[in-house]
Length: 143
Length: 465
Image (cartoon, rainbow over all chains, first blue to last red; front, side, top):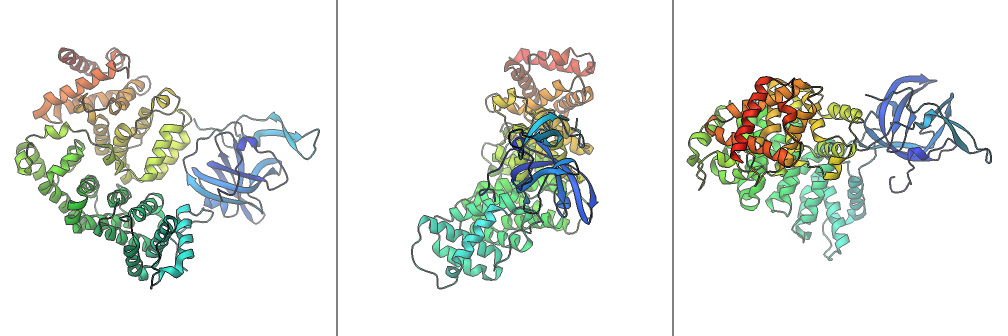
């Protein structure tokens, strides 16, 4: 899986209605599990050396991962869900644990805490407008 | 189809080593049953055959004899490639291997000892590293038992072919015994520690010249067992009757103090996973941004109270086996003293804390510029200095401990220890680890008694140098 896919850095991910995000990151923190319809979901803060983002775990993903796990996401989706900008595996994607601990990370910028707007020249593409918060408002940094 | 090497959890990627072994096995399976082809393989075919046979041995116990005969017939490199594969599996996957595969792994290791395979010492060392200190779980004690049985039953051929691996085993079992003698109510622990004790006493009594290779940490480990009658006798002979060990030229324990312990011994008490996490922390994680990594490390390795005895081993590893380069030292990466600082504050039992402090200062006591490395001293002095503003109690207790060691560690050889400590302090300033010891001697909040003692050691040191 690692060899076949080109992995993006988190600072380069852009919202889109497509399953086009393949990336590697470390899980920093997990929220509580809740039910969305019949499906379990759980928000998490994940990051790599360049940026952080909110990830929404679905179903058995919620129990499969914990803080410190290194995951590879293939063909995931970065899009709005109930007004929150979230990275998810989606129906066509796949996420797997490939290691633990050995990734340095930053908590800012957080790609979910950025206001994106459609690009004036290409309405299908999003560009960054303003930074809503430098760090995650859901998972504040540890001091 | 063969079974798996590991039981994977959901959403866990398969290990690339397992994939490569299984693919070789599937590809070559028809050739793995007798009659075996007689053709001479190319190097690539040879490596694939080794992988396939190894997978067969691990996953088809009922055909293991067939596979091993096949290997004996085909090996042309003294089993070097095969042993290398085994080491990779042990280092990368051992904790996750399913029980039948572990049993096969230990069996094939014995076979490799039997044929004196090239690299078998490395294989045995990698297995010793998988024994987790302070873990009294069934699986871990099983591995202890298997390894001590292996070293005892293969004693003669190991002594002949790989004598130094016996000293590695001694280091490991002495260290484990300190944990195993302190625990109660663990089934079968008495039988296990008797075997460990017998093995250690045998090598100490019969092959002491080999044991000297361990150097001064041999004394540190023996001292932790001094309350065990069998080891008390060894201790008495070390102090009062060194000729009992029948080593020419060995006349005094101070000769052991003067041998710096090679860093490979410290690695033996740190699992490869712990080593890679510690090295990552000390090479890539910035001070101030290390909180989450610290929490994960503690949760994984130090959450169970009994496991915290490993902090002593971590200290020896950090002081003696992980020396950062100058670029790292000058950067904002978390320094060694800071990691040691939080390890000291992770809620250790008092006897563990004393062992940890001894581990921190151990090379100070016998420091000799000709053989010792200043990097082994650096964490302790920087910890004491950096903790002055915020954790003065830690600095006080460390200095107090250092002087307690000077007074009591070996009263018969106090001169030597005084020389070690004063040389250490002199080198620390002379080489610029800190600008001056005034930061300690002129600190108002440091205990006056300790400042006075420090001043005395320093004035003695000036007389000497």
